[in-house]
Structures are given as structure tokens and as C-alpha cells.
Amino acid sequence: MFGLFRSKKVETAPPAVSHIAFIMDGNGRWAKRRGLPREAGHRPGARTFQRIVEHCLARGIPTVTVYAFSTENWRRPQREIDEIMELLEKYIDDTFTRYADRDVEIVFIGRRDGLSPALVEKMEKLEAGSRGRTSRVNIALNYGGRDEIVRAVNRLSEEGKLPCDEATLSAALDTAGRPDPDLVIRTGGDFRTSNFLLWESAYAEYFFTDTLWPDFTERELDRILSDFARRHRRFGGV
Ligand code: FPP
Image 1 (cartoon, helix red, strand yellow):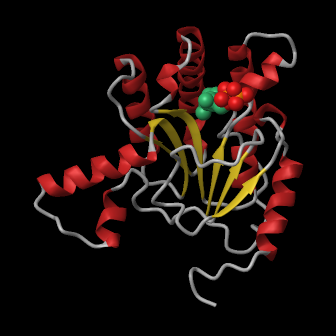
Image 2: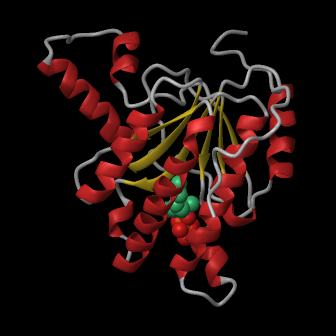
């Protein structure tokens, strides 16, 4: 099912996209519209994740971040939570066996507490096995943007590094070492950030589409990338 590390021709990237992030919304509605239980939307959602990440890498975008499970998603029905965790485990197993020939590191951002010890062990094994590679896929799991900032500040405090400057705080975040996202794409029709990459997205370009995540295609992504290339980013200047 999962094939992140399968070889693919690398094409030229559109200008200046060094980091792209996705809020993969709409899995539940996708399933409901087909008369299926909500949780049935996550499996096709996971396949879309694989396709889209693969496409980003093929386009030469070196960092991709996806929002897989938020600190607030624990409020969902248990069987939906179980389905998402199972898909993640399957993804890790599959990716681990195929990662050897791809120059991609996998990093899980978010809190580890609350996750099953077996899942955490797999996550850490995959991270350790892929560390230091050129491209990166960040998977936000048990992640909240505010929580990430609070954890970073508390760590800096413990280390006696407060007060600090922006660069120091950035370096203490889960996403440290990679540039901030250039664009954040949210599928599913809502216009919210939902606590995703709050610090890192300060100057990101946002794109919202009604497409439900399982239906999101490489073609739509290419259209968004073309649109992004035409946007004039001023970063607070003129
Ligand atoms: C939001 O749609 C989606 C999620 C909360 C889960 C995303 C998980 C996956 C795509 C599968 C697992 C991921 C990986 C990386 C293997 P929603 O359920 O809130 O949809 P709705 O807005 O229609 O209810």
C-alpha cells in the first residue's frame, strides 16, 4: 500500500519552494458521502498522503510536513483514533522496509506521551534509520502548535536560555533545522489554521481548497504551485 521510498524521476522544482505543509482535512466527510463510517476515510486519506508526498519530492521540494493527528484529535471516537494509529503503524512498517535507497528522513513532530509505547518505538526506529538525509517528511502526530511553543519555552527555561530571541526559539521547536513553510495547503473547505505550525507559518502563503483530502490530486497541487509562483511575497516589506 505504501511506497514512499520507491524511486521516481526528480523534476525541476517551481521557484523557491523549500517547505510545503498540508492540513489533510475531509477524510470523514469523504467516507460519509459514500455511506461509510467516518473512520473509513482515513485509509484513502493515507494513500493520498503517500501520492502527494511522493509528488512533492519528485518536484524537488525538500521538506514536506503533514498534519496527521492533533493534540485535540483525542476527542474523536476511539475506533477512529484506533484506525489512524493503525494506519500510522502500517505506514512506518512499510516505509522502514523501503527506506534504504531513498534520501529522505522521516521526523515525527508533536508529543510522544499518550501514544502507545509500541508505536513510539517504531517511530524512533524509523527516525534513527533515516536521520541526516537530504529531504525530510515531518509527520505531525499528537501535535499542537501552541503545545510545541510551550514545550520549547519550558525547555529553554530549564536550560537557563531565557529570555531569548526568535532564532533561539525557532531552534527549540520540533521543526528545528529546516526552513519555515513557504505554503500551507488546507483541503476540506474550512478556513482555519487549527493550531498547525503557528510559529513557523508566520509568513507562509495559505491555500484553501474545497477538495476533500482523499480526492486531492497531483494536478491540483501543481495548479497551487503555479499560483504560488505568481504570488508576491513581501515578508512585511513593500
Ligand atoms: C482530517 O480529516 C484528518 C485527520 C484528522 C487524520 C489524517 C490522517 C490520515 C490522512 C491517515 C494517516 C496518516 C498517515 C501519515 C499515514 P477529518 O477526519 O477531520 O475530516 P472531516 O473534516 O471531513 O471530518
